[in-house]
Image 1: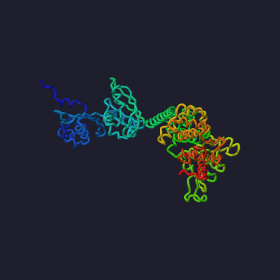
Image 2: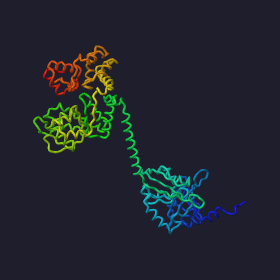
Image 3: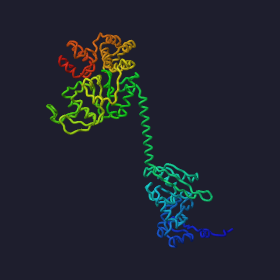
Image 4: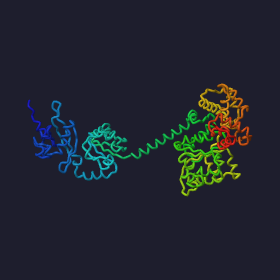
Length: 566
């Protein structure tokens, strides 16, 4: 039975323009609405569309090339139309394309188009409007700026395409089309790297279907960065707290520190806090030999200043007439014998790092005023110089003296004492932290074994004798006893040699607080003790630590008695 009407009748009855072209761009057919819209030169069968309407052909050519449906917008006269193009296939090959045209949303209500455009472009938030299939109908000026795009390049595309092209990482519009409910998310814009807070809201028709989707965009990049920075700061804070709480004795031992006693652990925790808060002035108080120099280095190593220099000055070892030049430096010609180009002082050498003033109570009064001024404003002048220099460093001072007593006797400036007294850390003597004796003895014995290639050991009996001894010379005396026992023992067991040393059968180094220091000994006793120190020490600095005196004293005595390390 023949059909009561032809396909041309159906096309002719459609109010929307329909036009088809072959693969070469020639019009295969067009309904009357298309002829009216595009004119007979462009829409008549056989017309070369690429010549008559190159703008229309551009869209259809893309459909033919991509072999996929496309949606685009096209200006025709004073109106804008939306083109929906579909490929035509025969035997699996694309042989042409058909397009159906419809007015854009703005042209549906021309009287309101100007008002709508003004409203959209006046808001500071980005606005996208999509139809019920996800095709982009409009983009306002604010959105163009936020996304760094031209609206004309995206109007007519489906939002699924911009996700596929990785312009954005995800789409709130697609969520709305699936759920028919409002959707909000943080959207990452690939091109600009911005973070946008996107809210997509559906507009439903009378049947409850999604007719439009209105998308609102707001730049929250700065807010996200602030939030991320806050989160990172909290993580760093937690990490520091964890490190402070969980710093193990093994980690401390790698810094030549043994801290098994509660007193020493408290001291180290205090130093860790001072290091992390970058305290600029710290005063270490403790008897001679308690390890003030080692703890000053520890404070430097665990602080942000660790990459910068750690400069130490042994105050009693510097002659009074040279102290100012050593500490503050000097300019060319400042005094007889000065270097031609001058010399930077120890404070300058410690720039950004730590300056350690060991035995600060021995700083000459003539230099104390200048040191006080530096601590006040970080400004110094070299000896013989006129120009001030700004030098910033942490100052750690240490002493075994009663600084308050020195202040009362006018041997130490009161104002300098209060300036150094900002953060005070008291180091317990070894007799008050006997839990550390075993670890210290093992540590320094291991040093001797490594240095001399031996495997000597301490027995339980030897350790009991060590832990019962009061160590008036503190850790320095313990080191000396271990060294003496190591040298004098006949076998690998140090027990007998150690007991003899503790009992006083061997000459032991006198602590500075004892009544018989090296400088007051008879010449014979001094020579004997110097030779003993030479037997176990490699340098005059080690000999000074071994004997409990300054390096300058050791050098002077060696020269006086004609003793040589060679």
